[in-house]
Image (cartoon, rainbow, N blue to C red; front, side, top):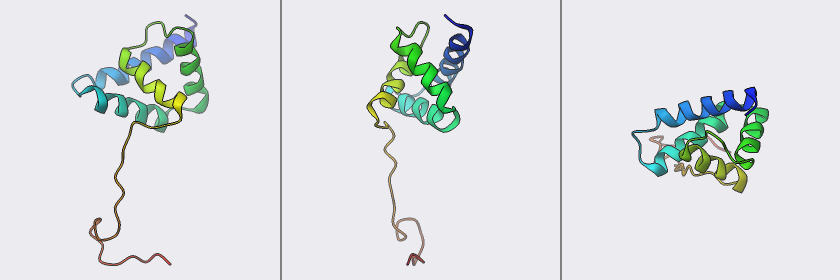
Amino acid sequence: MAENAAKLVRMANQIAEFFRPYGDAEAVAGIHEHIDAFWTRSMKAALLAHAEAGGEGLAPRVVEALEHFRGGRSPIHKATAGPAEAGLAESDAG
């Protein structure tokens, strides 16, 4: 494994370790959200390329989270709320 890939695998697995106590769906969503929010495009692309080449060393939850990048869908289901649900009496939108 190339040095850069090894570093990315280590970092991704550290994220997975943080989410170890969580259920599978919540952990996968958290891993995906963290990588999406804090990793550069080139880091994500390199990790995806590593996963596609067999994913040596990647934790299973990381592999699952990466599937969501390939499919263009996010495992995160964030609720949206209007002003009433957000605790605002009125909206100042146009």
